[in-house]
Image (cartoon, rainbow, N blue to C red; front, top):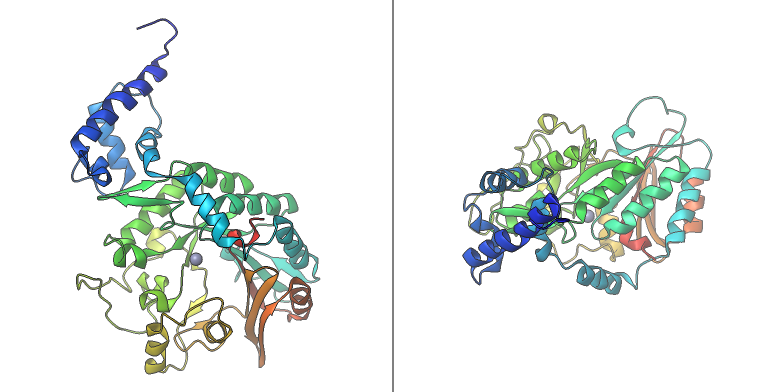
Length: 388
Ligand SMILES: [Zn+2]
């Protein structure tokens, strides 16, 4: 050993030169099966990969990070963020807009801003209870920025990481590779003190990736907790028409109506099967609930019409948020940011009905001031709409 070459540095070199070379050799031209070469039966859990590598290379230094250097090659985040900028340019507000929005929510009188896990907690009967839900569909960098802004204002918002998003990870054979940068974003959210949850896309894992979606969800909850996130809830990604079911229907007691859905190979999806309490989950943050009066045909037609489902369609958003034939909402109001200074506001309280389409922040301010005491409102923000 040359003087000056530290042990970690040497091991890193060996890891990169020997292990990667061997893996590439075994993987041959099938790059997607790169990690299969380590252990053909490697299950979803990253931990088992770590165990395998440790057994084969016991001299490696401690820490759980080294599988990341295997995964790093599989992610092109510069390309991803360039594409993201392009896609959201017509719809994105400057970040300052988010700050103004927080002012609107915070400055209205008799308001209690709560993380979603406390939305239904007692003690705010005479107040307007509000939660700020961030569905991180595409932009984790702006999500961390939002969380830091809320931290500076002393507000606890709720942030949900989408485990099926390209920024999060993807499957290589049977192994789920997490983007090596993901850990840093999660730590940024943890440090900001916000609520962190999972944006549940278990049905995509079953239907589009042919893998075990429930297990994927469980694994990511465990992984986020390992990093210090106190995961108490999930929020379903997409809506019923995307997969013919809402993502939250995989949870026991949350199916909207009894039916059987199958994947491409004809295997039944395990709806109504995963126990939230066993996973330490206390709520589902879309706050959807079964309908009191139910027209099954109308619900099936709504879920079957994937073409119509769009946040850019006034008719569809009205149906989804206000006259949904498949479900009701346990919350009273929802405000969705859907574009440049553009919101959809919908809900009901007592007999009063609200639906306003593509309204600006000034109108949101007026509407917020009119919300009745004792009502519960969720603001839905996708960080890519405030990425600047
Ligand atoms: Zn989403």
